[in-house]
Image 1 (cartoon, rainbow over the protein chains, first blue to last red):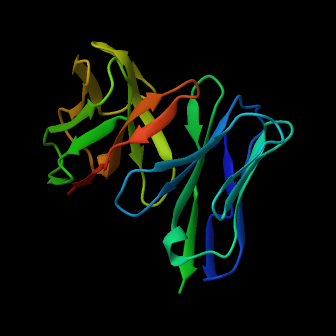
Image 2 (image 1 turned 120 degrees about the vertical axis):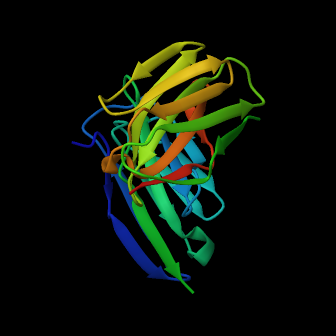
Length: 108
Length: 112
C-alpha cells in the first residue's frame, strides 16, 4: 500500500493545454516535495512545500499544499513538450516516501 | 552544491552473477546517502540508507547489501543476482531540514 497516492497515473495532453496532478494521503506530512524525472535520468527536485495552504509558483508550475498537510497538487499552465516527464511527490512521516508518480506527455 | 556520480550507467548481468554498483558524492561532507530501485516508469523503492561510514540501514529484505567504506562513497552489492533484481538503481544524497533528495544519473541493470 502506497503512503502517497498520485493521480492520474498517466496524462497525455496537447501543447498549450493546462493540467493538474494530485498527491493524496491519509497521513499528515511536515513537508512535501515534488520531483520531475525524464527517461533514463534521476529525479530532480522542483519544490518543497511546508505550510498548510501554501502555494508556490515556479514559472508555469503552481504547487499547492493542502490545509491539513495531507495532500498536494501540481498545476501546469500552457504545457509545453519540455514539461513531459514523470512527476513524483514525496513526503516524510518517519521516513521519506515517494508516490508512484504521474507520467505526463505533452504533444507538440 | 552536491554532485552525485554513479557507475556504470548500464549493466547486463547473468542470473547468479555478482553485482557492485558505486556511488560517489562531491561538494558536501558527512552526507546522508540512499539507494533506491525504480521499476519502469514508476515510483521509488528505498533499499538502503546511511548516515555515516559503516552505518547502513536496510528498508526491505532482499538479495542486496550496501556498504559505505568512505564518507562520500556508497556501494550496492549482491553475491548472486536474481531476475527480479532488474531495474533502475538510483543513489541520492539528502540535504537540508526537509531531507530533500539529490539524485545521481542512475544505473540501468538488466539481469538475464
